[in-house]
Image: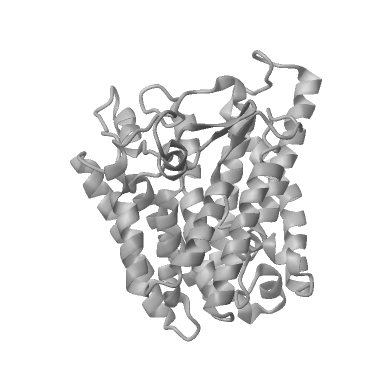
Length: 403
């Protein structure tokens, strides 16, 4: 899950910001800090997944059956992918401030293909129940895959006029739910392509191998394109006050649009309902479809991310934002590191304590998940901070920008 796009040249990463206090007070620290905050949200969800393997539910945001604590813990992570993807588009535009459009296009293509490769190899093997046998029986095409495909698409779409980018991005995000009724079977022509674009399905690859399209990519292409089209708001020399006004208006407008459309209960996601308790009703209102992300899923998540970006830019004198920016300055490194750390902890616990259900280990208390999150933050933070600094210092090592 990352914008997982490198901090483009021109963005002051956390390492440089710490050495130069003036650099901290820029719009660019806010971008890395927001990315870093969302990495922590992602950590919460992945710890939950790792240690709740024995308590699997068909839908962790099922308002009827899911425990409220689990529901709202899962809800926290819904901000991750939309924010990552939107910031990837924005970072691509900022990268273009010091590169030609041709260079940006080539970089997006190469970086997108690299992310797809990582998803199918390094990341595919990182999940707790996955063995190190390669190829695995099933490839899980998840958020890194979706970002990679979106970057490949953006490498072509950046050549469109900006108005067309906005129009196409809005059309994809707002109208793709009209396609929900198109459901193909493996016997239908175009099934595999449709599974990649909009239908969460399993593709038979032959030789006993399958691929699960966990993250259908069409809506994410719309999100990355809109993030790129908003790039000029962050250009050097732009008025910060005007940018903040735009961000606040955009974020507030998206959340208001979500409330109005969701309340109408006619479009954009599955209907909500009046539950047995007021809490269940609220949960139903907030239970949104992520795979693929519905219009109503994207409006509040991206909208909240926009408001947080404005907040981080306005209040940059605190002690926390530079530390978040370290995490956001090397998101791919953090992503891979945390997955393998979790995998190691899980298998160590399984070996020490044995399975609690079937063949898997787990904990029964959600508070244990949160304890593990806070325990893991320091050992993940310091290596990521080191790597973010290395990327800043060693511009001569070309491959570092891909991580």
